[in-house]
Image (cartoon, rainbow, N blue to C red; front, side):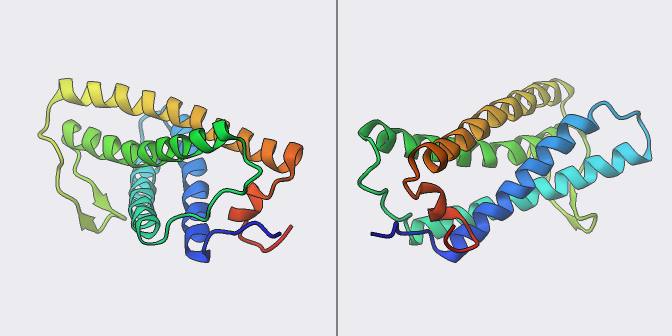
Length: 179
């Protein structure tokens, strides 16, 4: 019996978000060590812009999920996995919302207004405050490390299901048809 798959919209939102998050994590790790200059400012701007794209994609994803819940897990999934799967998915979603939100607040606290794609001015979420900026910078850093861990666990679970169990879990979200 075939495993029910996610809708194409859910798959698209998932994979677009995943690609953007991987890029943001990589660029975020790299950009902090750049010397002060135009390149660093441009990279930070792009990092913010794509982070906000991730925030929008995730809000759309949550709205989609609210209207169209995910397909049921196959009956072969163990009880502990059934209990853990929604916790892991919600942890990912919360982190993927918290990262751009904390970055936006961090910019606001630094007194650096965010212009989405250099055009659309966004409101400052918090007042300029150097102490708050430092706290938000630490939070953003910690959230990024937590996100890396949760993403790694998510990928490990996918590999476990696809390679060790061949139970169809990965195929539910794979965008290119049956594998």
